Amino acid sequence: MNNILHSLFLEEKILTKKEAKNLLIDLYKGKINPTQAIVMAMMYNFRKPSLEEIKGFKQAFMDLCIPINLTEFNAIDIVGTGGDGKNTFNISTIACFIVAGTGEKVIKHGSFGFSSQTGSSNILKNLGYTFTNKEENLRKQLETVGFCYLHAPIFHPVLDIISDERKELGFRTIFNTLGPLLNPCNPRNQLLGVNNLELARMYSYIYQNTNKNYAIIHSLDGYDEITLTSDIKCYTSKEERFYSVEELGKKKINPKELKGGKNTEENTRILINILSGEGTFAQNEVALINATFALCLLNTDTIETNYDKAKYSLKSGKAKNILKNLLSL
Image (tube, rainbow, N blue to C red; front, side, top):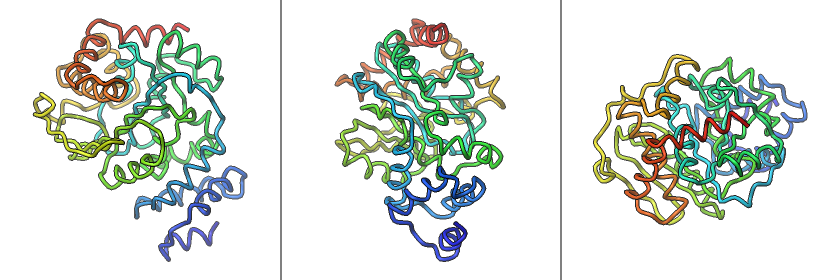
């Protein structure tokens, strides 16, 4: 492993797909210790991973993960890379409950916050949700509630091995980049937020040769979600295009209005407030526009129609009921 680290750092070597795959398999087998793995992961903060490296790492994760089959559902995952350093409230998590409140199925994949204050797993655990990798339990949640949650470390042993080191490190690594690609049940639809255009293009290259129905979004001022603080770039299987805030029928939002809390407790309260109809105008609009883009992947309605569906889900309390019913199972 030391030779690999030397070549990656000093010789700027790029791994082949096979080498990248074998590197993570060696970590799983205990041939590489977690500290060495984190050093390797940090290296990609100094240079961008190649497409072949991403493919190799992804294949290793999926080969080693606990399998789950929920393909009978036309479900969506809404997820971001994290690591944009913006400390927003948990936009994608709230958007998931809004989408489920419209009657659609959501299979969200996420984890604890390592490069952000609070990840979706932190909030759900704080609310009393029990993580599970039992297929029958997740299927029941999806059938009765319309939402289930896949906590990444209990599906991906490699992530569990290095979780303590990632927490101590406290900033983004290659594992942030890989995370959105690793949903164990590979839902048909995905709204994926990315914090830079180069990475957005790379995800687009990866998904172009799959049957996934996707939208990869990037706010041009650096957010990994649609924040209405700037125009956005969007890649889909059909096209790539820009959307201006005005084109979406919205007004630009001040970034200060999207700030999250200082800890899990504060971010949990923000989520509950928004789902309870007590969010600010800016919080509501941003959650709704992300839910809208997700709905546009699930149907052929216009952005305006899907925005109205999302707004009704939030304002009627249906989105909050999804959370309430999930926690009562």
